[in-house]
Length: 410
Image (cartoon, rainbow, N blue to C red):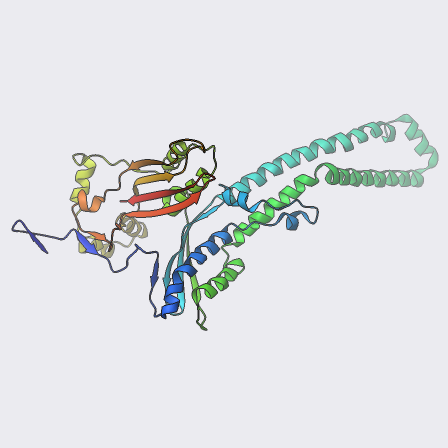
């Protein structure tokens, strides 16, 4: 309790045991050399995870030796339609590491849409050309070989039934042979490129699905991470993953700062429009002034832990328990988002070389300690519980720039 103005008032802030200000927490004893090498190995670990998530199938593998060269590495890094991964949040133990990753898989959605679109175009093109070559020729030959023609009927009657049956059998063989020839010409000449592109998309899609499979590719990533984290140790290091798939990049600061930095690398991109388009992706519920009905309801919700746990003990319904638990989870809704861009973002030959732009939506205020007037947990240092912050640095031809992002919850 704290005494202010001769009145006893409950403390509004409590220091938490686990500090999320640093993304790596170590619960083990390490030597001095290992402790100094740990930040470098963690930086390499983040690069390794991001490059692993951006893996693509080689065009030589997809299309054989005749395939074209792969996408340029620089162009592949600038691609906006890729898998965005946040920096790893790691808890280290003597023999175990828990890695938490947040990702948005834009590449999978794009590949699925592209495959369906190409498949539709490919099928219509095949049918059109098939009708042109095969059915066109059969229409010319059908009146000659049809049984309705008088000349063919007279010839078959004069030959006899066994020989006429053999004649029809040979005609069917020639018809099937011509059909195979038409399909081989269609595939080899005109539709070879379409089939190669479909094969390439399908291989990249299966590769994208197997990246998060613990029995195939993720096991190889774990072995590489073990070598990075267990520096100077002969023991095995077990890796445990907590992978959170998000629907939008606006729900994590690492993700939207990376995406905006990639977008601003291009010279003809308007920074203000791209910032506003990213901010508008975030859904923020309406927060009114302190005099409104919503804020008054929030101020009245000052229940104790026993009062919150009482309905769980009296109810047996799963839906009621789920609703009561979910409604009491803190910081599950976004209350505000803020983006700051500063650096060399103008044209090359201009006087105002360095610029700074700030855009925001909502607010970064902590409702627990303001409107509700209840205790709110605080981290040691400058970090707040309801705010996540990240910075991404990048460079262009004329100089470097940085993107800062804040995301507040309520």
